[in-house]
Image (cartoon, rainbow, N blue to C red):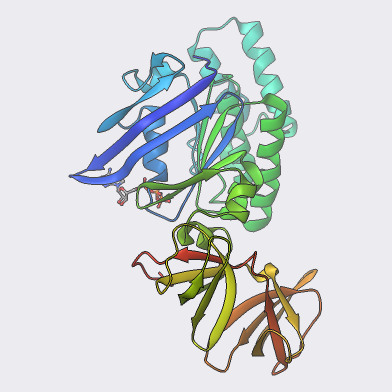
Length: 357
Ligand code: ATP
């Protein structure tokens, strides 16, 4: 069932009267890599399972071009699935695991052999093709699971946290592997993760979910530079989130925010009213350290060397903590000034939820 675009139209799923996913509208174009991103319990897996046909919708519809899909059974959608627990057949060799789906389709033996060997090569498991899954590392098992899905040349591959059981190094390797596979095969992919970095590095577009609702859909760059609200900012690495108040000089392009002894100029995102409570956010790498006579005065409390950069925590006299990243290495207890670029300090309306939560 190939398509030019797949459309989710108001897709809603509830459990016992409580919405796990509310009104998801999304168009996936053929060849696109989409990441569903958000914290645990935000509805990512529910969305994926609705797409897969493993969960009936409570409301809404799914369309493959002009064909209604949500009424089609899971097996007949012909999508490939890769989960975090690889779900391989333990008594079958790698080769037989990969060939299994093709055999179920009763394809000619020569074709099964050709496509199986091609998939084995694609995931670089030539040397392990005769082994049982139990004889492989986690990363190798995950490669078998991926090969087993892509060998069927599905119109859509669905992946649910496929790397979450791997250690940090393997996770990075497999991330590159998935990107390579996607680029060489052009497979349309919907990928669930709670890992912001993973989503940013893999996806053409990201869908950020929170409590079952879409917060923003956009390219990595759009989400990074222009998060729609402070929840998305929080997820995109805006580690400095400050609860402040917009003062009277609130304009279209600039807003002055005050509180906790701070007075900063930022860029409003969304409707920021004068006098209203706001959340101001800035990323550690967008703050600059200078001498104490300039910017916000603070004292260095933590210095952590991280390869090419140094992560710094500094605190103001009023107890506001800033996270910074620099190339230079300040000393503990040093008095510094923190320079905040008004274009990089994004000011969001506060929405009654806790900035620390
Ligand atoms: P995680 O990363 O932890 O898997 P998630 O973002 O994938 O989280 P979902 O698994 O989609 O989240 O769950 C969304 C909400 O729906 C949660 O509150 C969850 O408890 C609830 N939920 C999911 N499946 C069921 C179910 N079968 N019965 C009842 N509630 C469910």
